[in-house]
Amino acid sequence: MFLSFKTYLVERSGISDLEFQSLHPYLKEKEIPKGTILLQKRAVCTHSFFVESGLLRSYSIDQSGKEHVIQFAPEGWIITDRSSVFFNEPSDYYIEAIEPSTVIYFSNDFIRKASEISAAFRNYNERLLQNHIRQLQHRIQFLLEATAEERYLDFISIYPDLLLRVPQWMIASYLGITPESLSRVRKELAKRHFSPRN
Amino acid sequence: MFLSFKTYLVERSGISDLEFQSLHPYLKEKEIPKGTILLQKRAVCTHSFFVESGLLRSYSIDQSGKEHVIQFAPEGWIITDRSSVFFNEPSDYYIEAIEPSTVIYFSNDFIRKASEISAAFRNYNERLLQNHIRQLQHRIQFLLEATAEERYLDFISIYPDLLLRVPQWMIASYLGITPESLSRVRKELAKRHFSPRN
DNA sequence: AGTGCACATTGACCTATGATAAGAACTCAA
DNA sequence: TTGAGTTCTTATCATAGGTCAATGTGCACT
Image 1 (cartoon, each protein chain N blue to C red):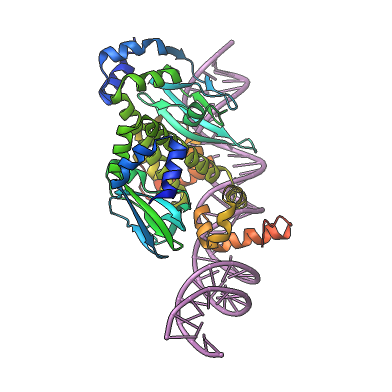
Image 2: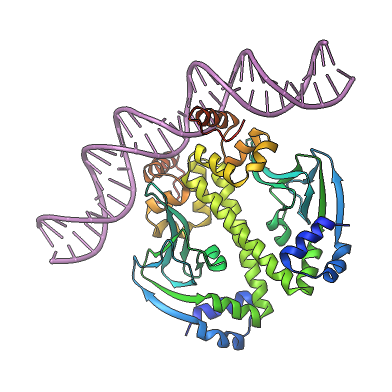
């Protein structure tokens, strides 16, 4: 039960098997079909999701109704709205399965409990936060500095696997451009024989 | 000595006077003239800076030589490159005083030691990280969703005080637009009697 | 007072990207 | 197999914002 998550956590955080056992009650595994919404805007996000298999994304919808992808989460990733979880505020985001997926839900209590019983977990959790900050910072820098094309190339180099699994309009949305623009960028790249694939 | 920082920390984190005393060795106060560079790109950032008075900013310089302001830090704020500090990597950023300032330097050791001796500090530190994430997320959302004008209005509502102290080209840089564009936005706003000031 | 410098504004022009619309390719369910 | 819904591409046109250059304005230093 929860094998992949256990492997993940034990390897990364260094908590012990025993400690993990005692956290079992805070875990819940679920199969979810493509299209399932795990978090709704305006709801307080009470769980984080470890993706055992499949692929999730988080996104916002702005006033004019446009979606903006915040994050993709393939197998072995965790996805959530940290701010909503931590500060107990209504979320601005949606979390949705874009492939049929198996997901492990873990609650605030899981994190609280794990932090309580394991210094290793606390360290790991801080590393996660720091990493998240680094990644957000990177994204801001690219949004400020880079053209659509550069952002796309950056995306490819960071998430080569996702290229093949995610519809292009979602990638465009993640990059902050329209699908049409992305299409143009790709055409241009192909013309210059920079084509990364297909 | 370090009075304002002490007040700040004790109030916010809830560490005790005594605990603060024991952290003294890790603190250093400095007067720095306008224009001083506290962190250079490619250097590992070994300290964080609490601004006692004055105003600092962090920024990057891209390949084409353009500056991009990451953050402003007026009195009572902390500025640093967390990723560089935490992961011990060379920084991508500069930190500079844009007014003559008084700054309290605190090292990694300060944080390590404080975390060691005080659970309150650990909690506070986590809250800081979570807050940082929330703020970065907000900025990403605005970069993805909003026009130059909307971003400017957002900036005003969040940092009304900075409007008066920071040269406009730096605000433009923070918003991800050129000074000329910002000037046009302001003109447009004034025409519509939306002028927030001057 | 005068010189110089940083900053802000303005105007003319340019370019990347958005909007719209139409069609092609694909997927999937009946 | 058909047909309806996606997704992707392509073309045309529109626009926000960038670039460049000139001018203004205030302030600091001599």
